[in-house]
Length: 370
Image (tube, rainbow, N blue to C red):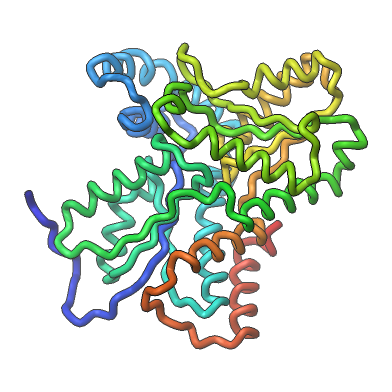
């Protein structure tokens, strides 16, 4: 086994502490070639597709990577912006703002962003952190609900990369934050802001649909807590909004293949609600903290069409938390609690100076976040 030489290392360099945010990833462009490269890495992960390699890899390379990239590229093109991938853009802003919020608390820590698949890649970001003599790393996957298909594969990848290093940093990990009070409050404020703008869902006799990414049903049977954590998030959000059990529903989207996945499925539920006479559906995706293909295209485009063509009258998609101040505050609370006991530097800023610095960051990012 070869242990990499730490790039540019000099003995005596001041050790740093960092928070590493990790999200799923995105193609670098809405083009078949870029999508193929992304899907190849994503769908080759044995945590993501738990089918024996001898069975799955011929299907992946012989069928899926031949047919799916062109179709997926068209969907990515529909949600791509002049700033590029929405997922990457929002995740980058979250990292910048989190560093500002932590600095406001007097914590002088670096905040980096990596993607599990695609760029900026985990190996590249970890190498940059080693070059900066980052001695302590708090890994914070941007998945509120734990699943072996998401959070665990981040830990796998980091472990594999650090196995090649000589000087391994001290490591802490955040497993989940599905029931964190700040996260639930951020979701609540997002829904209330939407209702202030579009009117009360209750007055309209509508339904709040909480759509989470689906996973195969067998993961629940094998002990994955994802389903339970999604349900708990949904219950806590409903309670914070004072919703009755008949005023909201928890669903699961993005089913792939013929196997049974967690139910109820989002698209059939939207269709059924419209057929039952529900006139308005407001859809929020609590498991996604940044808008992406699954929210902007699958829900706001395909889900909208499903509901309206089945007889529904009004469809609203509620944006992900993105740069919401309440969510960045929740991330700062979460990070600060896990950083306790580490010798993080102090910024030495006054409260007024810290607030001014944060305001400057927000202005540079295009104005105060929602």
